[in-house]
Amino acid sequence: MVNVQCREPLVEEQCARLDGVAVLALACKLPLFFAGDFHRWDNIHLLKNCESVLDESVPTKVDVSSGGQSAILSAGEVATSSCNGHAAAIRSGLSHLAIPRGWSWGGPASPHCPLWAEINIPD
Image 1 (cartoon, rainbow, N blue to C red):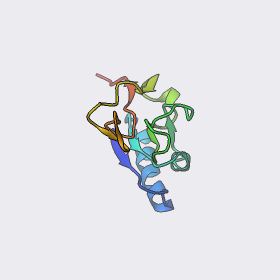
Image 2 (cartoon, one colour):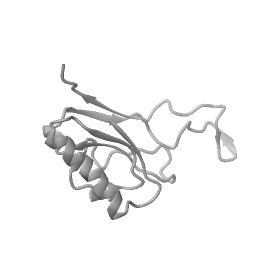
Image 3 (cartoon, rainbow, N blue to C red):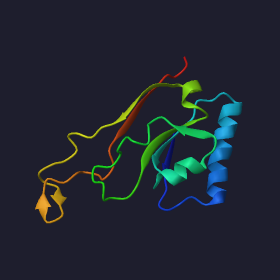
């Protein structure tokens, strides 16, 4: 599992580096997943050797006006990865009365929803 945080669109060199890691993992038959904030779906589409375990229609932000696009990517196709197809974003229970939301209360702890995926790890 590799944690990723993109603050802006990926440049060609960064895409090549991440794709290179994915290709090496596939060649070694090593289960590899990239998880984190990819800034936007365009960055995810630039990674040719990776596929998202979540559909693009799944909202991964608590507040739609906030930036960022969280995702879990599989090196290679999801169907041939260690992910068994069960994945989602948790969207409930993320706010608390003591956290500000603008000029009022009841805000979220983070603008991102926690993501989960069931991954089968070999013995």
